[in-house]
Image (cartoon, rainbow, N blue to C red; front, side, top):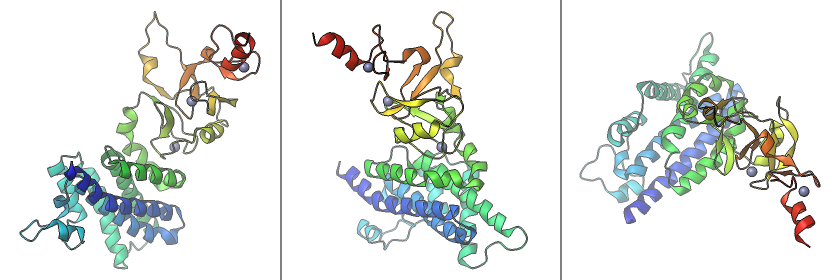
Amino acid sequence: MATTTASVTDSWAIADNALDFLQRAVTEANANRAHHKYAVLDLAVAVETLIKARLIREHWTLVIQPIGKGTTKAKFLAGAAKTVTPGEGLDRLRDVVGLDIPTSRATQMTTLMTLRNQVVHFAPPTGAGAATTMLDKLGTGLSFALWFLDHHFAPDAPDAEAAKIEEVKQEISAELTAIEVLAKQRLDDIKELLDAEERLYQCPYCTHNTLAPRDGAAPECLYCYRAGPGEEVAEEYLGYPGAAGPVETCTACETPALLAGVHPVKDNEANTGDPHDPYAEPHWLCFACSMTAAEQDIINCLICGDATDGGDSQLCGSCYAERFEVF
Ligand SMILES: [Zn+2]
Ligand SMILES: [Zn+2]
Ligand SMILES: [Zn+2]
């Protein structure tokens, strides 16, 4: 028990720091060209610290290089111990911790670290197309950072880190949508995660088919990380072809985030149709609680017009109570 608490505390400070650098790097990558070198530097720090925080989450000694006679936890906590390079850290995550780190990913990280060294030594790529090269490499670095975050850092994060990850994801959502150089790679990066989803919708922010329903919570975009608030996402979705307003109050969670005409772009259930129990395609989606319903399962109350699942009375709960139960 004591060990668990200690290791959570050990990784928290560095994880917190890493996520701050990531947020800043994304903002700078989305800013004008003059900011790109700062984006490279901050992204390199973010990646290096994310790797270290992930190692420390397992055990603090995993970041020490080499582990020798003088290695003590006090030295580590004081920042006086020599630690692994990002490359060594990634090797340990693969070989010691057992994370799946394909060589292509390790190469992406090396590309970022090489670019960082060039920027630090005032020798950024030069010549024709140099700016594009730098931007492409920055895109590669970002692709790695977000892949690492999605696949190996966010899953099973301790509570404090999970909360911070969520916060940063929402902060960088709009920026990610705008970084064009990222789009080429990011859809590939999240392919596995997309494949694992039973149902997907188009995200009204980044426009990719990457919005995944979450049981009892707002759908989450795997591309741009946008997740709620449901009222805002529903309003944003209103402009989409097929979406039929107005936004209704959800019959399950009572948030004004329920919209008609929201059809999945991927739906595994639709493919396993049973001829005796025909599948009713979802037509309603609540952007606050991910509830879906077939077209006929939600109606407007005959008296007040609110969305309701009605039952036989075709009235909402409160109109029904007012009419029949007060007597
Ligand atoms: Zn999105
Ligand atoms: Zn709802
Ligand atoms: Zn009513």
